[in-house]
Image (cartoon, rainbow, N blue to C red):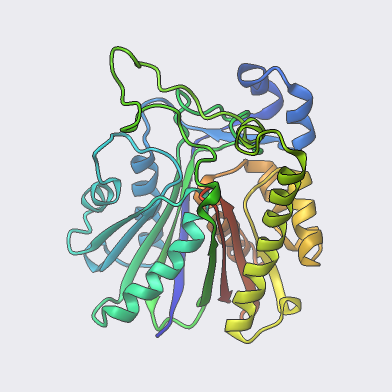
Length: 338
């Protein structure tokens, strides 16, 4: 069983200049400048993550010359909260798109969800022989009440969605393997203090707080023990390489064969280190694209892939890796044969 991606399309929020917007989000302007981002995307208050998702999905289906009625599987991967609690955002998108015959699945594995969900597609195709068409939408829409775009992470968060239309037995842009490493010992990173069953919204706790910076949360978790923090940083680094090596081994390929490795739209320093750790040039990554658009949550890798395909940045037969690191913690790698 295999499948290939036949079309990709995106929807982005309005572009804003980082240098002009940064003073609204942070006092540490030097830190933001050092990250290297030029622009990011922000939607208006009335646009939700499902609006972005449906728009991208409809555009991708149109590019594939397929109708919503032909979709057998609809998967939505988001890293943040949707418009409502106690609500299935994937099912809502399925209905809005008009894909009423499709199974709807919601993936919420932080920023790794988009890369990991490509394995979910493979599994559904394998266990449902009648499934022919799947739509995967990766989307991000920051709730600024809970997260600061320029302080709650080591990147600048952007709003947008990218949809991929996958078809069984399609030989181009073909899925080969997905590998994931999970380590739940760090599951509390980036969590929101309030709003859950431990501290529900109430008159006593009307404010759930905000997601704090990763550095502050890491210091709290490790008791400000520098040695354990360094060990954690080394684990992030080693697992990033390990998950790529595992994927290559399963696919029977060598990392040196990869034409492109598309990672999170992390800050420039982090992406430079990522390329060095994998032994590839920075030009083989999506570093430049990330600096122009910001971090699109689960959608970075498919956004970069769409750009490469549209601009002829890869050729038929090229090997491309989509990689991600996300809170949870998860490290994931998907290999595609263009």
